Image 1 (cartoon, rainbow, N blue to C red):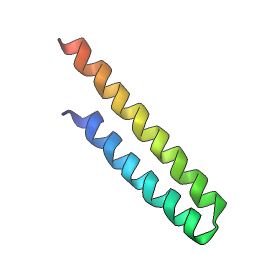
Image 2: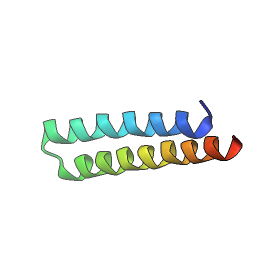
Image 3: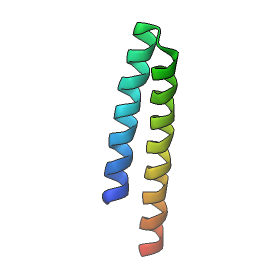
Image 4: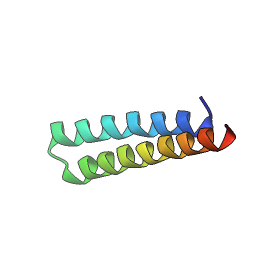
Length: 56
């Protein structure tokens, strides 16, 4: 697992926490920020997959 995979996983976890907190508190802005972080995390993980494929 490289740096991009780790960063992606961290962003996804952060996003999940923010999204859940936003839902629980009714804070739509926080919920949207959480969803955006999750997407960012997924993109970073895909980037890591591409980098891994290029190394092979």
